[in-house]
Length: 194
Image (cartoon, rainbow, N blue to C red; front, side):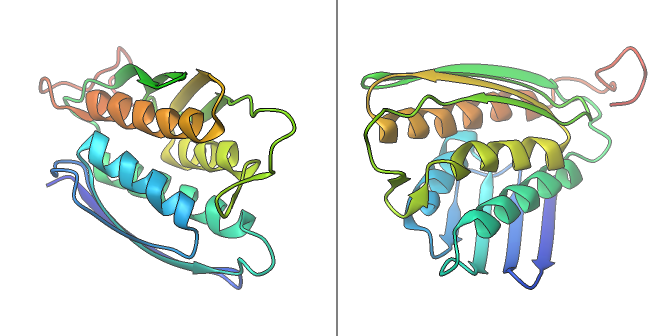
């Protein structure tokens, strides 16, 4: 089984996370950030990764630390669960619509962290989606990609900010599902390592 457990405790956050890449999309997400919970549930469901997260943090100060550390832990879990990456497809992409929004995501589980995240939020709207600061949404994706050591390119267009963000999580889920599938027995690199 390609699974990982990550525990992280700092002065700002406490996170327990379990990931199963060969699951069926079952999840139990418990954080004080309800909008983030909803997005992580979408990530689990559409990637078919089983995901358990129990996270607490200093959200009375700001949601930044908790969002960043959840992304960090999820990236660490992905990297750990992939192991030597033998036989994986390695690359994946998805284009996912949600009403007015259309998200395009491409990933390469290359062993090198990089993130280009373009989420243009609508002007003259609230600085939050539910209880989650908009500025921390791209930061979550960046933390995930850098700590998961994969390349992430994400672009979305649309009018409704909720739809834009949700389509990004769903597209990332579909791209990661494809990239993590076992399609052979070899390391997917001319270098012999990923």
